[in-house]
Every structure is written in C-alpha cells, then in structure tokens.
Amino acid sequence: MPALPVLAALLFCGLSVVVVGFQIALIAGARWGHLTMGGRHPGALDRTGRVLAMVSALLYIPLVLAVLSAVGLGPNLPHWTVWPVVAVMTLSTVGNAITHSAPERRLWLPIVSTMLACTLVVAVMGGGTPDQVSSSSSSSPLQPAALARSIAAS
Image (cartoon, rainbow, N blue to C red; front, side):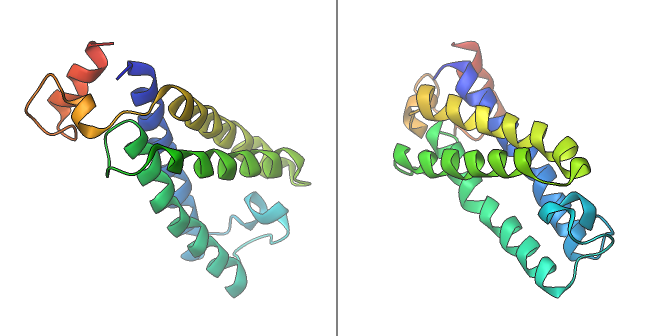
C-alpha cells in the first residue's frame, strides 16, 4: 500500500476526532453555536441543535471505518464504501464554503476541505485489504510496526 493513502486516512481520522470533539462540546452546552449550522444560534445550541450535533457525531463512526478499511487498517469493507464518504465531505465542503457565518467558514472550510482531499486520495489511490497492507509481516495491520512497514515500503 502506498504511504500517501495511509497517511491521508490517518489525517482524516485525526480531523474526525476534532470534529466529533466539537460536536460533543456542543451537545454538552458549549457556547459555540455561531460556529455551526450557519451561525444561526449564538451561544449554546437548543435541543434540536444538540440532537443534530449528536447525529453528526455518530455519522463519523461509519465514515472513519470506511476510510480506514479502504487502506486496509479497519474492517474489511468493500472499497466502494469510501465513495459515500467522499460525497459527504463534498457536501460538507460546499456547505461550509457558502455559509453566511464568516466565523464558521473560517474555522471549518479548511478542515472539511482537507478531509475531502484525504478521502479523494484514499478513494483513488487506496483499495488495499488488511492482508495486502501487512503482506510483508505476520502482525496485525493495526499494530504500529505493521503500519510503519507499510509506509516505509512505499
């Protein structure tokens, strides 16, 4: 497996942690409403906004699993499962590019556009399975040594 798709997948996962952390903070009552949902909710989100933040946070579970799988580091899902992730990140990028909230756009557009780029790299250049990633080793592809070998082999 080439190093670039693996690194892109790991960057996507790291940024996903940031996004989910933000959503959890919103659910907990953080007064960051101006940085989400078009900036319509200054201060803390109302009940509906918090439910939407929870849905958004939960949505990242299958997104991350699909991206990791596409580079052989997650469950063995079909490679096509990464393409819906590309679609979600495309919609997120467009939405953040056209939002009326300048603070939201400044914060999220660089993040979601980077995530979109990562998913495109994974979708186009990825396609490995766990046994392909770790073919030079008997260790699990989730172990750091196997990951380092797959990156170094590229």
